[in-house]
Image (cartoon, rainbow, N blue to C red; front, side, top):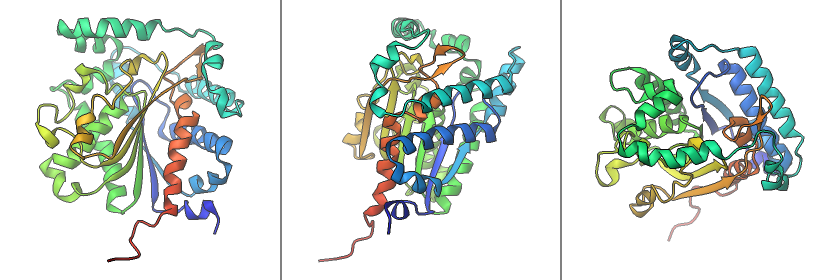
Length: 330
């Protein structure tokens, strides 16, 4: 039996969670995202392409909910232009056919590359936080993400429901799940994982079910002010954290201001100390995506196609070579 057959069982599922701002329609977002992930596997591990192809793949899409908020604030969205620019960005990234070229030399040559946004956030976040202005700052930068933290709105509840519905379906089916969340979608993912672990409405049915792998890409979870607003933040001991993740891998791109605090292992080390997660790994990468003629280190396509994302996912695929059931007892 080939490697692709061994690691391509139909009980494996990939669930994507997108982040803030306008997004293409679900089918377009899914198609472009999977094309980027597949291109990375085809580049670095061609023997595992078949294994990826036979996996179940879904997306927790809530682009219509964010669009409602943004359009109400007078913002407009050209879907055709956005999809076209994403395709151009992906085509350029697919031309990089050697994983070693995803490094600083190539990154420094990108048009419009700038460390200024991340530097500003690094300086201003602690000051604004001390003055109680963190949420107003988020509101200025991202109306939809600010609405997520608005206790008077039902936006967070509706977004979590979208993800929870998809994730619970996979868990009910007994699938082995890898959860891949981009940007602020990682906050949504964290909150849903916490709900399934601790909320009385879900704990009885899902408290013992595990996500085998959680990959966060450009996540703002390292920000202390965001952490204070996560579900469970006021709880003590293990009740504070999700209990349903086996391994957590976090990728942060250079100059991506969304993840200006780019390490999570230090912030969530108590999860390992209390043995509620096997490991939290951090990786600093260079996102080579160019959007609208300028470097965009937060681009989901740049994260999806990156060699580190590819390696993490393929390593997970290959774990099917190890039988999870013991063959011998003493």
